[in-house]
Amino acid sequence: MKKVVTNDPRLLAIQTLSRVKAGAYSNLQLNQTIKKHQLSATDKAFLTTLVYGVIQHRMTLDYWLAPFLAGKKVDPWVKELLYSALFQWQYLDKVPKHAVFNESIQAAKTLGHVGVAKFVTAVLHKIDREGLPDLDQIQDPVERQAVAASVPVWLVQALVDQVGLAKTASILEAINQAPHQSVRVNTAKASDQQVYDSLVNEGYQVSPSPVADHAWVVTGGGLVANSQAFLQGWLTIQDESAMLPVESLRLNDQVHSVLDAAAAPGGKTTQIAEHLSGQAQVTAIDIHDHKIKLIQDNAARLGLADRVVAKKMDARQLADGTTVYDRILVDAPCSGLGLLRRKPEIRYEKQPDDIAHLAQLQRAILDSASKRLAKGGIMVYSTCTILSQENDQVVATFLKNHDDFELIPTETAKGLTDAQGQDTLHLYPDDYQTDGFFVATLRRRE
Image (cartoon, rainbow, N blue to C red; front, side):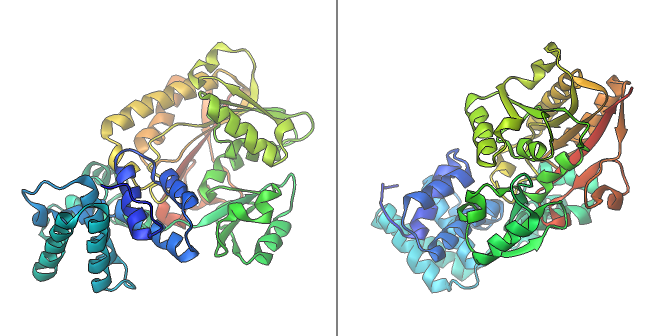
């Protein structure tokens, strides 16, 4: 692919997709592309739709395209171009077919040469003549569902085993929908009403979160990170489900010390800090230097730096220390499979072996952190994944090995656990159109 300087969203999409396929993170690469180029709001939206759309539907697009590429050696960027053409053709009603064809052929010429353009022309016209292969030709129902949703077969099977076919279908539909923006009010600086009024005055549409307390769902008006409320430190951008682990810590005036055992980038750390009073502090640890700075920067922006102590440390080494804490949050490193709406490429990167290794790491962190909890104290274990291997099974193993701990009901301001009728909280992407999350609350016996 030629190096081409352009502000054409179609060309930028192909370049971005090629970098993501080579290992870049989609959200970071897309943000970098948008910052680097002068794009209208319409072009930014189109570029974002193209990039995320192709990644989200890659397995379906590949299934459709495969018969037309059989036996042909195709450069990776040309595949991305064809995927983007197919995505526009099949999923975007407002883009007419002739425009898709013309723009894709021109892109092939601009990024490659006349020979590539002829090849792309031939493929697109052959698809137009013969039609796309029908997904119903796939006999196995799990494989068919996997290709239709562009989710690996092993993951679909794991979900089917866990929650059944109907719920799995609902989850798979939800993860390919665009995420909305949600914000948490910084109650140390502003009230819910102040944040609401400020955002509405700037043209945002704002509605209360059905999931979390002190939270608003925001649409329209552009990026919330550009709002006055954000710049003044009145709010932080956070998915609603990610606010629930801190709600479950049952913070009150009697809590003097809290440990956030895997804290970066600091969203939950600052949420904890907002609820602390007097001389109480939250100690936030992470294994990477640059992430410690992220935590400190977030705390400073929100005016909470005096309540946050950020330290570089491996959470697996916590057992070596002597300080005990009233509350501990273990928001553990995980597969991130609850975040597929925001980071769609994760689905293609993770394998069953990765899940097993992560569960081992999660058990080690939980075991080490538990040694630092005061008697009668509460420890919350949470992940942003939807697989039981990293959630219920980790908690069950921990309880089996620690008879001085007990599982207690996870409490949230909106009573979500009560609605599920169980002690742990399982939030799937289709429940409230949030990220998938798991929360378990553990208490150390007196």
